Length: 209
Image (tube, rainbow, N blue to C red; front, side, top):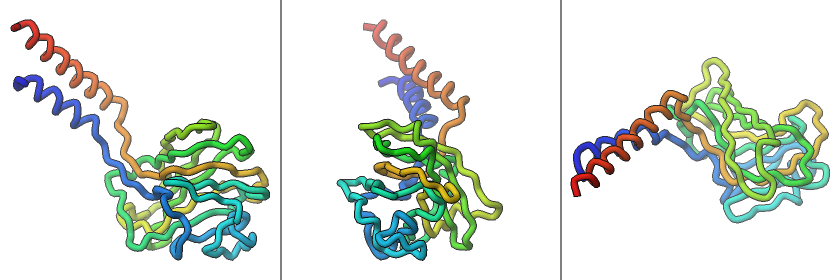
């Protein structure tokens, strides 16, 4: 491979790669650091407990929140506490959710909230209609931060329908939640330029033989 080809590929990879931090992979949800509230809790106790709604399902690297009476009320949610503070520094522009919409869902959206070690918050809202029924899709949403939120010291993550007194059924299978830095539109131009240089280098090399 000549120097031009190597330079082009390096350029393309450099602008193409952007950071990502996995905040929850749903491989094992139930545990002492996970709390359920409202209709998402076993006894519908808004005080919260480590016992989920009995109709929730733990799958292989996925978790299904669904069941009779499971609503999108802001008082119904799940919270994951980190054993140690998690940093998303450099990857805090967007949150990404990979998951599958279930056919019996009637909720319109849900919210992911991050809580730092001083109880400051950041959140992203996801429209459920953007997800697919029957197969996982990954959707990114911009993060809105409370002033003073510390991206380097996240203590917990919450998932909720986030609607005050909401009564719509929330039915969704989560595969993962990530924090990411998404390239600006101008970056895609650089990626295209880099790939173009790769093609040019390959053509020039072919013409020599």
